[in-house]
Figure 1 (tube, one colour):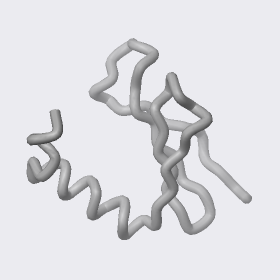
Figure 2 (cartoon, one colour):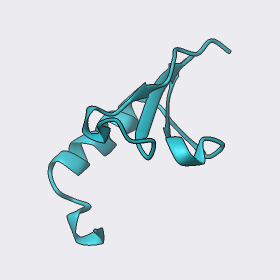
Figure 3 (cartoon, helix red, strand yellow):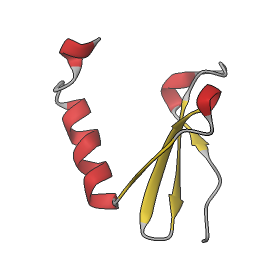
Length: 63
């Protein structure tokens, strides 16, 4: 399977506890850098829906 490099969220700053994302063939992968062995895989469509929901504040009550 072909992967791109992990990219860190711009909201993470210089810390080591950050969200990272990369592309795999037909998928988008998401992980937290301090738990790198746990990877969430989604289709690009599902990942876009997750981002839209987060931007709309749908998960704010979980914080």
